[in-house]
Amino acid sequence: MESAELTLVNLILWQFAAVVKFVVTPSAMVAAGHTFWAAWGITSLGASSGVALFWHFGKWWLQWMEKRWAQSEKPVKVFTPRRRRIVRLKNGLGLPGLLVLSGLISVPLASVIGAKYFRDTPGAMPLLMLAFVTWAAALTLVSWGIKHSIL
Image (tube, rainbow, N blue to C red; front, side):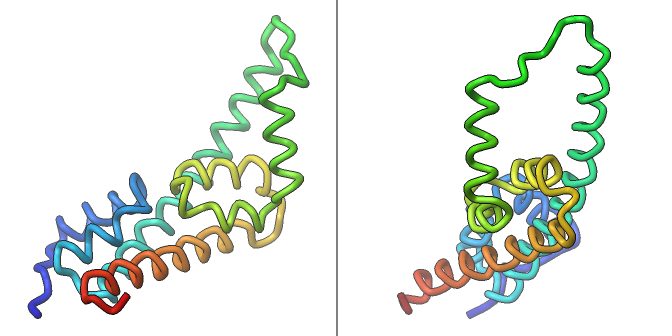
């Protein structure tokens, strides 16, 4: 079977797709005719780059928002139902829960949540990247297996 052509523009677009719609990108790449290794590698690289970008951007944005809220004249409700749910999930699932769910919730959201709640946890960002690499392998393997009637 012939592999799909991979130009520099296609490479960049597939990596962008991995950041925007991670969960469908490996399947789309396999369906487009790319090899398992190309689909897994490009999706992993795109997601890892997205984690780095959104982790640092999210950390900066959240710090900026905290400063802005601290200067506002209007008092902020400390315990809202939404915040209680978020804290309950964070405390209940922790970083391992975020790593397991990361592939299902998207690169930007998982990265910003990680930057917000686990930025002081040693190795949290590399672990999140590793989680996306693992998710990419699993999703690519399932897609490859379905396309080639292995599964």
